[in-house]
Image 1: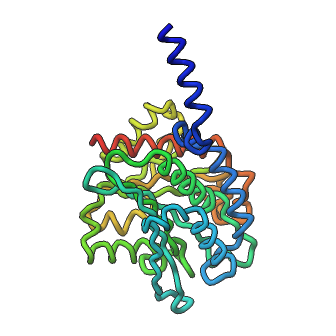
Image 2: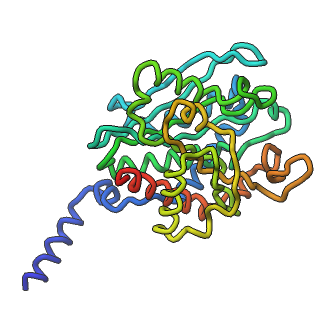
Length: 309
């Protein structure tokens, strides 16, 4: 009888709860939602190279998905001017904060712009910048429903990862170089327990690289995360040493991990790392909800594991 009464009470409670409360209690990371956001993002801002009208639309798209955090004072626009081969260019990083219960911060970052030198070929960067922007927006939806129990989690949408002319230490990683310097000056960098970069991991043919520029214990945790989530088949097929947004933080002693699949499409002579990379072929049909689900599962599990480390 107690069991029947309990079930009846539970049913009444479920029926009387607001719909958003029911949804929040069972919300999980959704690869399909991340895919849908990718589609929406590249439709709203396909050619988002710095200084373009679409770059402004990309900024507006990101802002529009974090009005809840902005209302709480947990959304920051980090505006700066960068000296580039094309002159001084205005750039923006966006930082979204989800306060935790332990002292320390886990940062997950992605760049959101497209490649400036490719601005005349119709490059939309569906996987390279598009899918991971959507991935972090959907991760924000997850964190809104499941506030961090351990370290705070910050999402960073950084600008100017791509070279303006040709890749070099000075002509690349503008957003994270600026942010690493800023956070070094104000002491924020000491709070960062791990800085994770997400890049090109919406790829239908997903296999996340073992990046030798990443911190070894975080690579080990990624292998554990893959095992725990049943995704071992999708990691560490290839060993790489990637120049990416984690480097400015690595240089300052922060533990870093580049979660990247650089092997994107059939290799060509011009693009040995994959024939879709930095070409007009980087389009939505090369991205999948399945890969975004795997990537999201891994990131959620990485947050849990870093808290235990």
